[in-house]
Image (tube, rainbow, N blue to C red; front, side):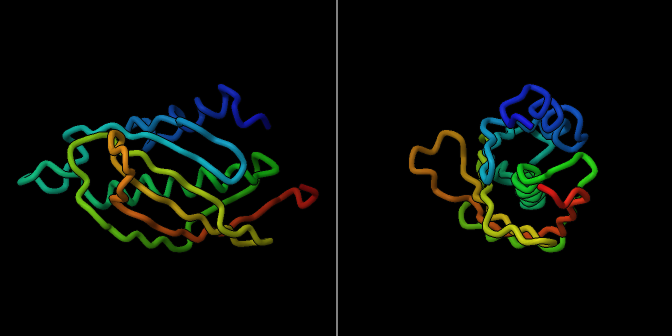
Length: 146
C-alpha cells in the first residue's frame, strides 16, 4: 500500500467517524511515523474558565494516532488492532489553538505493537509538549507472510 495515497488520507480523515467529527487532518504518514492536526473548536473544551482542550479529547487523538502508526504495519485489510493500554502525561496547558500530534513506533512484536505520541500546539515554534503518551495495542496479522 502506498502510504501517500489519497485513499489512505480519505480513510483516516473521512471514514472513521471520530476523526471526521474532530476534523482530524493527516499531515504526514510513513512507516513508523504519523503527524496529524486537529483544529480547536467549542466542542473540545474541557475547562470553560480558561477555554482549554479537554484532556480526554487529547487522549482520544493520541490513541487514534497510535493506531494510525500501527496501521503502517498492516499487511491486510483483515488484520486487527485494538488498544490494550494507553498512558498520557499532561505537561502544559492546551490553549484554544489547533494541536499537532505525532506518533512513532516503539516496538512491533508478533502480537503487540507499542507507540509513543507527543502533542503540542500548532503555532508553538519550540514545540513545547502539551502531552506525551505511550500506548500498547493488540496487533493481529491474519496474513503472516508480511
